[in-house]
Length: 114
Length: 110
Image 1 (cartoon, rainbow over the protein chains, first blue to last red):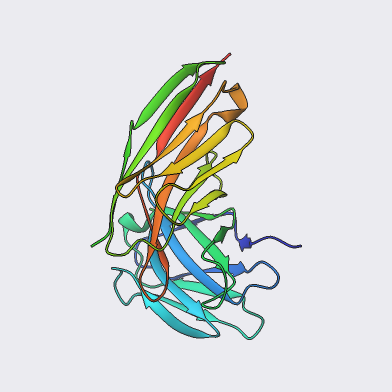
Image 2 (tube, rainbow over the protein chains, first blue to last red):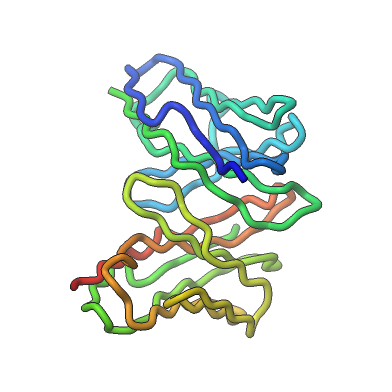
């Protein structure tokens, strides 16, 4: 069974730029959730995709957007980067609304905005 | 709004010294409470799901319990490899998103 993978591992961007982060879900999972984790804090929910549709969103501005593809992989896009966007971005997959509640996380992408 | 508070923020134990981590929660209609382990710079690793008050789950030196207001993660005779940040989360909403606490950073000294 293949676990959740994310790319890239690390990324450095300049304020105002745009970034795309990628996630491949665990095999058999059709739901992907994205979380932002600032240093010393717990992860915060950004949004979730279920069968290619957004299925819930946390308290993040519209410059955070996403996509899910037919193979259930997902992208997180952030426009107009701000210094406060520096964080560990985590992707988690789960088996969807008809399955268990457990979410399994990838290793994360460390984004640094300078 | 769901809230999760973990205590203590940090805990240092000697190898073999048992202790407990606390997770207090406020949620309208608990659907599940989760414990994760997170090593520095890595993603959280799933440990346990608890669904109802009175439920207990065990894995090696870890035991998680749940009441109507809080959960405890008991660590029996810890080893240095148990050093990590332990995160508690509750699930809610139609998206079944996780609401996390800030974690307890556990250090086990040899």
